[in-house]
Image (cartoon, rainbow, N blue to C red):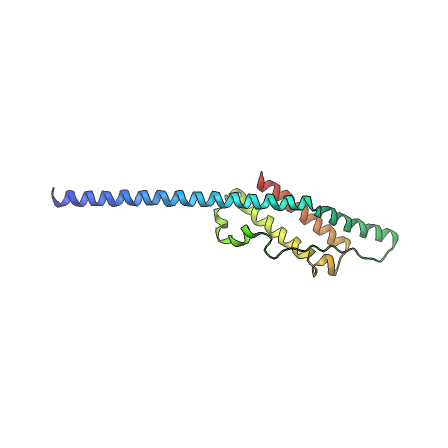
Length: 159
């Protein structure tokens, strides 16, 4: 075997090795992406389930109704809505923001929008949120709009 043949065999072996590694890296990234997307879908489904079970929309509707009734009866009282929310209420999303690009292009905008709306609502119902410090019919209307959009987007994510 001459030197050229040996170099060609070595080069060909290196190329094959490189292509195999490239394939497995791509396959691994694809697996990680699918795994992360499924985790986000599961978290969104769990959040929507909690929202439904705890009847958060009902609380927002009651607040709006209270202010509508108060305006009609000229009653000057307030209706506050406070929800205790754990600090890390969306662990999969918040602990993996560096992997957000793994989510398919069709879903990534919805995922980011869903969690943004959720964070906004969480701020509004905390003890120092607008529904506790400056509750009004307008504040409840706005929160209901944000809530409804979040639920709509969440359902789109999981389906």
